[in-house]
Image 1 (cartoon, rainbow, N blue to C red):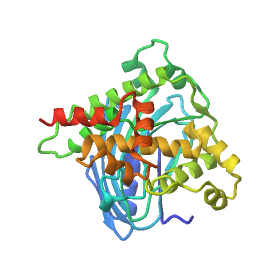
Image 2 (cartoon, one colour):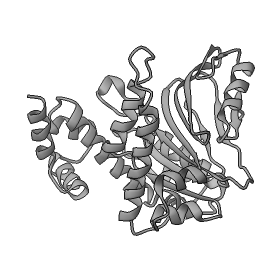
Image 3 (cartoon, helix red, strand yellow):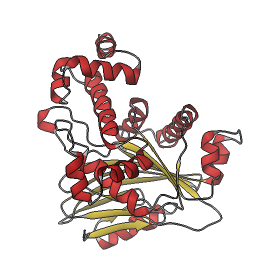
Image 4 (cartoon, rainbow, N blue to C red):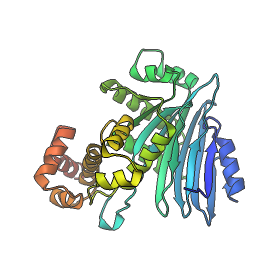
Length: 327
């Protein structure tokens, strides 16, 4: 695809990238907030820096023409690590069917190329947490852990995590805290540290490891597949159509997808549907049967079994808890 614009820069010095975008697109950068509104689309992005080597970026983007984000790989004595959290795509009702889903946590180091092709005519939101090796050592200590093994691995690596409700709530807190009149600036420091701690806990629980030396083209293609073809929860994706679209056999497509996202395509898709069911049960007043129908489960009993397998309790238990908390 020919991109109208490519956002690229050293993620450990994001201010330079913001200045460049503001200059290129005739936007405004005031040292904290980047605003762009033109034929290309709209950008509303905030950047915060703590202790010189921790950067927090919070972005709301809506593009009318093709735009790509590309991390700039960096050979340096001070490697950095990036947590990119996509925060768009929740299907709350039939009128808000985005058919786009960038929900997820993407964790990679400065040697791994990472690209995101933004959707056309869809609003998307991202939280970026960039930190250096020295920042990690300062706040996470020197105790042996799975995340420490990852941090000290010198090859290029990538790790994907589903966006669970606990992390999502921390991200929402940051987005809601942007208003300068009511904001608590300490949140932009403490909440990202909480997110890193949660990611560390997740890694301790997982038996499988992280992905090393992923070919950048494979990562780019599978990210596109995830966001564009596994986002319509009302329609089961067709593996044969995906195979034809990407010019690969179904087995090869599943193998590459699993090498990045830990699960074959349909299993990953069903996991996302269950996560969406959790969001809708806990945040809307729709009945569990209605949610099951909207998400195209075979029947409510099938959704309930899958839900219990994933979370250890039934959808009705979660709904009862929501009802008690709302009293």
